[in-house]
Length: 137
Figure: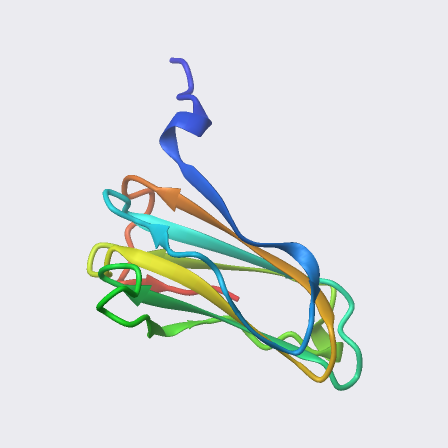
């Protein structure tokens, strides 16, 4: 049996390209999840100095924020990247069956610039039974 073409089965989005992010909050563009079952979010950070931190969370909206403001998804937050947890890749999986149509990735950098990036992979069907949120960090 032939394996399916992976590119035709999933959608991958670079929410935040790997870069040095200054102190502050950066929001990704809205990612349309219509027809998708789950999203895998991959967050990687480089060296984090002694006083620097990065917090990454997921927010959702029904209309990409035009009338329905983005709000945080309860439980969809990565462990804070600190000097004790640098050069690490984290993954989280969000089941979209009860989610609103759009998600975005929010990154907050504090204490100084940090190199980090985040990708989102959308899957159109159930690849594993899970509850509404199956977050792993």
